[in-house]
Length: 374
Image 1 (cartoon, rainbow, N blue to C red):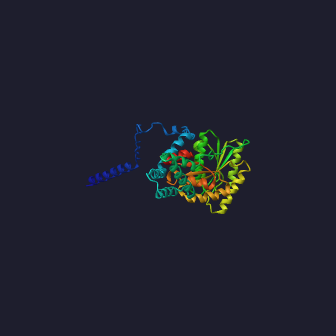
Image 2: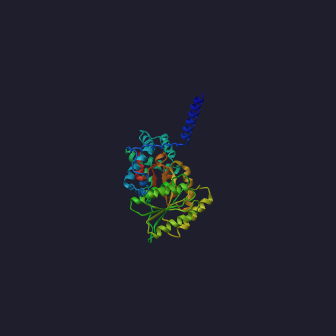
Image 3: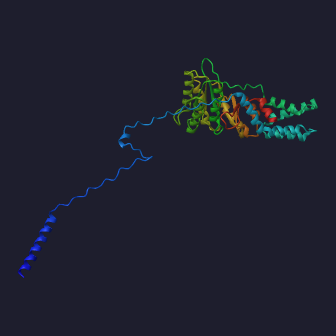
């Protein structure tokens, strides 16, 4: 019994010693295993990130210089003048020829001829003169060709002897100065840009004055026209004094020995006296630098009789020397050419024929009448 207890005590002591030894022994930490480095692929560079620090920046490209256009010459403009007018005005010519070709020209026929002419805005007085001359010639010349007679009389009515040259050359070494005026919406700014193209095609040097300071869009539009043909545009602050801008433009033209300065003025209603007085001021201020050689009044051909009212007022303020008829290809009332010339005693010098940059042509009485008659 005593031996059994001794064995049990000895076993308990051995188990206790073994437990103490196990606790006292330090545990070994497991070393984490680093993941394998990724292999370079076709779309991943193997170069370490530090290599990109010293990479040179990409060169900055210089903006390309604007390509200057070469405007169209006068000869091809006249060809298009005939084509465009023949399309829009041929109804007038066909109507007159159909009536004059009748076997019997009675009073009803002559009244119909008068109606056709007046409807085309030829005007009452010019219409009566034309009809009287046609009646006399057809009665005297008998079997003469009505078309040939009508052509001769229409050309005489449009007056081929008027001086339609643009006065764009100054004297005493000073530039020619062209003042462009008109009401809102007639197409003044576009006309200025197109005249510049005509002059550049003739190898003249040109400066444009953006004196329509009340419309930022007009100034930007003119700058675009100038950029396309390499012409300088003098501009001032928005809402600034138009006379000051016009003065600076002409001054620049004088100092640089430019051939022609064209001044775009603000559109104004002919019944606003204050605005009309301002236009007179622009002309007076400009002439402190150089004489104004041409005052062009831009008229919308589609306005008909209202255009005549505008023409009278503008002519009184700035002594208009020439007419530019825009949108003539979009109007069937080509007779406005005759009436506005009669009203002002000044010639139609240019006609607008469309929206293209070179759709402005010198006016020719013969070409106009030939287009009417087809």
